Every structure is written in structure tokens, then in C-alpha cells.
Length: 213
Length: 237
Image 1: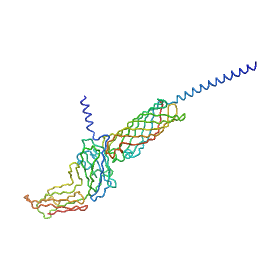
Image 2 (image 1 turned 180 degrees about the vertical axis):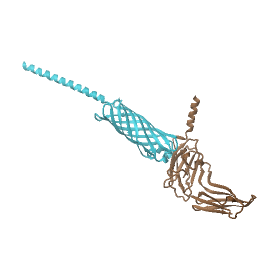
Image 3 (image 1 turned 90 degrees about the vertical axis):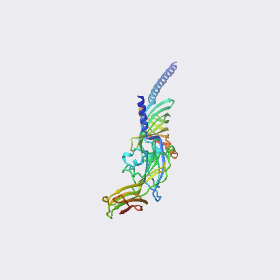
Image 4 (image 1 turned 30 degrees about the horizontal axis):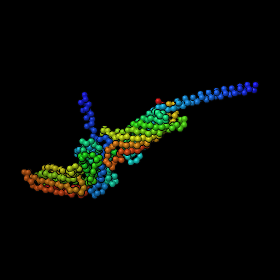
């Protein structure tokens, strides 16, 4: 009888311990989830600096010397599962060093506005990878030599981009990556110059910061 | 109010000299009189219809420049330029006389300048040009002497190959000669003048001698071969 009582007491104590332990685990899990939730990205506003590098036989690669540019992007995370929505503005300038290939242009301002979708991969607690596809409008505002007159070239572009985003704290992120643009300009030219003016390919490595909105 | 807005918009639109999203291109080959290609010769495309006002090119008349470049070692240039609006004619100037520093080479002073006028519709965005021949520059030093000390006066004209030549590719007309006309009395003599002309060309000196009663004493035309860099020609009467 006494032995039975002792067994019941031990069982009760063990059960209590187990219950308490489980309770503690649940609390920690909730706290962890809450912390993770805080870390989860919602919307970010980013500023990056990039260096465009054109390649191939096109008028920008052959005639321009391009300067560093800046990129402002707005990203909405988790719009559907891990998909992201992107709105992007990019600006850089370039000086013409071979005017015989493009006309009497001294320098041009390159402006791009685009939007698109991405999908993010959480690599670890701090880093996620974000590839995206954008479609947009590109415009060259050309400042001419010897005159104040301005001319314009424009078109559309498709941009592929992949960036790694490092979480510094709850609201600040560091990003770096590389993009590839396929430009389709709308420039009328002599038949033998059509391909030279109407298609241009470029890559642009970039680095910047993002803040959580 | 609406009228003014429309007027301002029209004014702004009419000021545009250059078409957006458009280029014209052409090939040009530049040689000398011996068909030897000339390298580093400037070629300029202007959106102006009167090329005479473009020579010499100064910092004041550069507004109409649509494109410029220079020939390669083979005397060849593929020049792509901005396209003018349809109400602008086009002039291509090969080896322009320009102020120093305006273009990379500025003038190659050894050779003539050729301006090609084009006002055809540039719908194909291309211009077909003939090969351009530049002549070497030579100097003709003309002296007129009254060695007989007569009271006769002389009327003369001198036609030389022009330093700056103008060709219209529309109607085939060309201006390739310069004329100098003058009348000299005994007190104006001796007379000296130096003219730039083309090597391997012929200058024509035409004169009429008149006495005090305006009676023609003599009249003739003389051809002067320009066969060296500097030719001295002395006319005496």
C-alpha cells in the first residue's frame, strides 16, 4: 500500500515536471516566433549605387563612358507566399567619347522606371536571396555639344536582377547584387544601323541599404 | 487664354530642330588628287541650308551641328548624326575651316574644303554620297607692273580654283572657283596679291588695257598653271 502511494506520487511529480517543461517550451517557441515575425520583411525602401557596364555591339557600349548611378527601389514582401512586388527608379549619366557613332551629343542622362516580381529564399536567419524580373521604360536625355538643345531617345527594357540581403537589425538591411538589362530602343536609323541602335545589353553590379517601412 | 496656350505650344514645337529617336548615317571616302586616302580629315553635318554662312566655322555658328567625326587611315568615315526636322536642309562639310580647338583636328590646312548641300527627304535615314576629292592648297602670287610708265589703266579678273568649294547634290550645281576683279590706275601700281588656290589646277588671268580715252589698247586671257606649292606670276605692260 505504502509502495503504491510512492509510485503514484512519483508519477504525479513527473507529469507535473513534464507539463511545466512543455509549458516553458511553448513560451520559448512563441517568443522565438514573435522575434522571427519581427524580423520578417514586410516592405522596404532601398537606395543602391550601381555601375552600368554595357556589352556587345550597341551604341551605348561603343560611344559612351558611363558614370556611377543610383537606384531607389520599393519592395513589398510576402504579397503571395514568398513572392515580392518591386517598383524601381534608376538614374545614371554617361559622356559621349565617340560622337561619330551617335551624333552631336555631349552627354546623356539615363533614367529607368520599372516594376516587377521577385521571390525570396531565406538562406539563414540573417541572409535572404532575392531574384526578380522587371519590365520598364528607359529614357536617354541627350545634352548636345555647342548648343542648349536637348534630344531624346527612349524604349523599354526587361531587367533580371539577383540580390543578397543581409539583416543588420529589425529595420536596416544591407544588399548587394547584380542585374542584367535587355534594352529595346525605338530609334529610327539607316537599315545597317538598326541593330546597333535598337538593342543594348548591360549588367550592373550594385550595393546599397534598405530600411523597413 | 486657350489661344495663347496653343500659340506657346506651337512656338515650342516649331523651335525643335532635331527629331527625337532618330539618326541618319552615311559613308564618306576622302582622297587627294592622286586617289590617295586622306586620314584625320574632319567631316561635319549641319542642319542649315546656306553653307556659305558656315565658313569659316566659329564658335558662333555651331548650333546646327548634327554630327561630326574624322576619317580613318583609309580615308573612310561612317558618320552617324542626329536627324534634323523636315524643315531643315543638310550640309556636309569635309575638312572645314574652323577655329582652333572646336573639333579634334580642326582644319587640315594643306587641303581644300568641300561643302555638299543636300535637301532631299531623309526618309530612309541614309545619305548616298560620292567620294570626296580634296586638292592640296597652293598659293598664287600675282604682281602687276607698269614697266612702261604709261598712263593706261588695267581692268583684270583672275579666276582660281576655290579654297572652299560648294557642291549641290540636288541639282548638280557647284561653286568651285573664286573670282577677283579689279581696275587699277597707274598710281595703284605695282599691285601685289596672294590667293589660295588648288595645286594642279589652272588659273585664268584676263585683262583689258585702256588708254585715257577709254579706248582698248590690249586685251587677252592667260592661263597660269598652278603646278607647285607657290607660283609667282608677274604681268607687265
